[in-house]
Image (cartoon, rainbow, N blue to C red; front, side):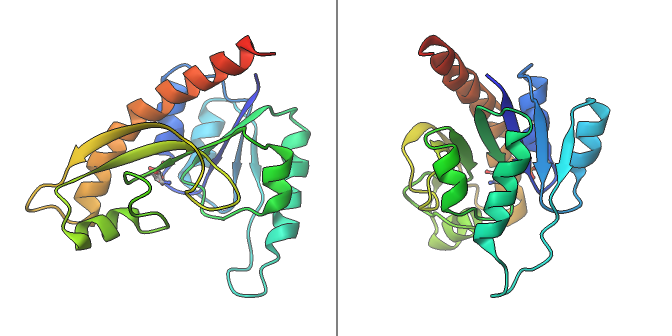
Length: 188
Ligand code: GRF
């Protein structure tokens, strides 16, 4: 199974995937970010498909087609989103239907969207966590594969809570990716 990782942020989730000895065939980023350096260090091919529009003029469908075209060059079977900052559109989810994984920093279906950590904190929950799920066109709605709880501390702010959630994601996500890949291998 050939895995692609899509990242935009600090790359720490991507690093956890690599540290878990999961082979990554290609990394794709939508902006300059730390994942590029990490891919270079790992001698893993890295595609930068820079997103230049963030307003209403952004052609999400075209960008999604470009992502599919880029990944197709690498014969990708499974895609792991690792903090990827662009919501992709139907052409991507049609090309990789049921084969896109995502980790979300909250216990879905609670607190979907970009601000899962902030929203949980503002709501005053005492337990939040992370969710690994199959990503679908409906953001944060796909079938849940694994979850883990993380306690919210009284003095948490968004950064401290997110970092504690990420330290859990860095185990849960690679473990779940491994199981998913093994299941796929077993059924092909
Ligand atoms: C993770 O919390 C993930 O759930 C979310 O983006 C974050 C990525 O972290 N989708 P990093 O940029 O890899 O450190």
